[in-house]
Length: 183
Image 1: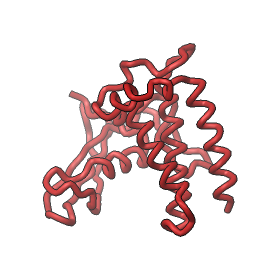
Image 2: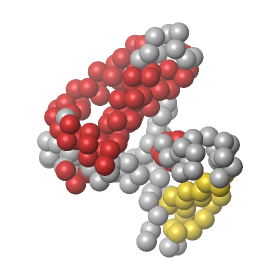
Image 3: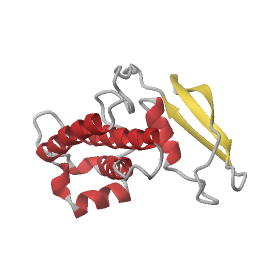
């Protein structure tokens, strides 16, 4: 079975950050990488040791056939126009909510750079949800929710997965990112 595709380093790193050690539930690893092959396609292996319990950790991802480079203004870049294979649409929405919440925290919470990165991550994650909507469709299809967390996010608020809703909120958060975090 082919490995899932990590469309960018940011997407792979987010996956690593959100998958803590099975033994101690901490996601603190000094990751190293090595190139590899998966059924003839290039891949990248991430490996390291959990800093808390010393358990060995390893993940491997296939690299995209045609990687899309980030744009000059992309603070966070998860990949090209195709939807993610690592996170479902509901998970991206949850990631977006957490990033925007963290980035919108009061100035005495974390550094400016940390808040800016968190908010940019939240905006980029929200844009990822839109990639699951097929051309001509008005909403994310139910097949785009394949994890328990993602499915629960959809079941609780399905209206948050319509094209109109997502585009309106994405535009607003992009404007807020530019206004709040001018350098």
